[in-house]
Length: 186
Image (cartoon, rainbow, N blue to C red; front, side):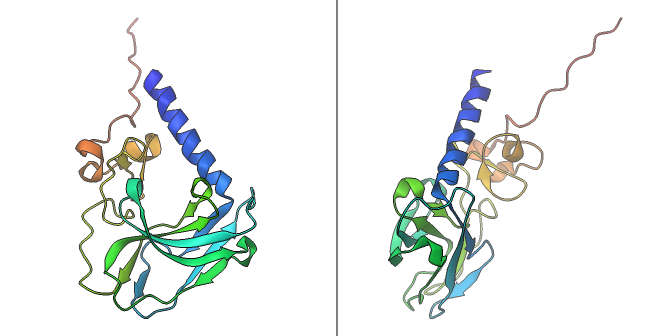
């Protein structure tokens, strides 16, 4: 019971922090390949909460979900209602499948894109992790299971039916399947 309540608290905190951002990054998305020299548009929507900030930064990040590292500030101090930012990918950018965009004014309010690939210097590495998580294994308490949709999370939608244990914390899905009640014979 205590573990279930704790899991619900983590989900509520995660959803609350996402909702507070007021934004949803819609491009680039999972599966997007951007080549060095390309000038893609970063696009976001304003969700029903709406922005609470007068200006936002658009930041290119890299790394695992529990430790994203800012690489470049692509656009700084822009009106969130513009909903777009364009940049040119440097030719010396390291190739990777674990790039992500953050949009927001302060880190607590950032909205993040799904992972996407940048092809620059070097070959594209194989995806040896949860399919939509930039090749990373789900290995933190609040992102413990690789769900059927290829994203990391917790709860029955991630740890239940279709969970991918080879990409989940300690190789286990657990916690997502409810036990069938035992029937008593009369």
